[in-house]
Image: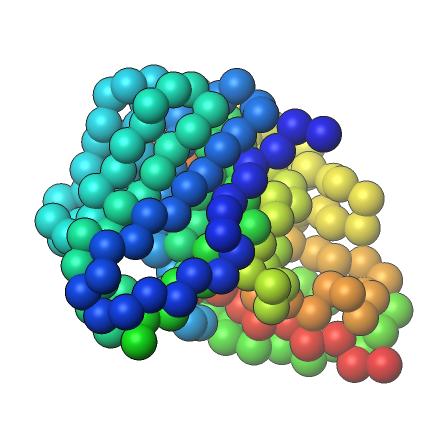
Length: 114
Length: 115
């Protein structure tokens, strides 16, 4: 089945130690999104790629970076994680950017910062 | 600006009964898409149902139906014959051109199904 895959499902890192989360998709979608979700809150969009075009949200901290080396893969890099970065990180894809297009989410990576 | 409002933070429902989750939206765009997602405690965001602004009929997907009242800007989700596995957080969301087609989420409603 076509899907969105995230690895790892759980990630423990130390304060200030760089960490990379990965997302892959077999849907061949053009758009890939990264969200941060804290407990009992709605997901918050960090940035997205439309093909190779990177779109950062205005309030995303510089500590968060992303790479999309090809259509299938997208990475979230947290350069110096703080305690406040502990959250669920969700990757999502969409065929194109249009109002009727569904975003499909991966299972998420729970990040714990010690 | 666009906004999604879910006024019910939490709800309890008896197994096999129906439950309605409220969602109202605000946008000046004429074209928009409305989505409902389910998020169980495992964390995965599962797409349930979609309603387009030009759709004249209410969307249905199995036990899920969307009660779309365009004039009232309302898009309530109805879950029929609730099951224990329906216990989760439910998010209403919208995509519009004026927001670059990003998903705008409501605050979510937690549903707990009782046996």
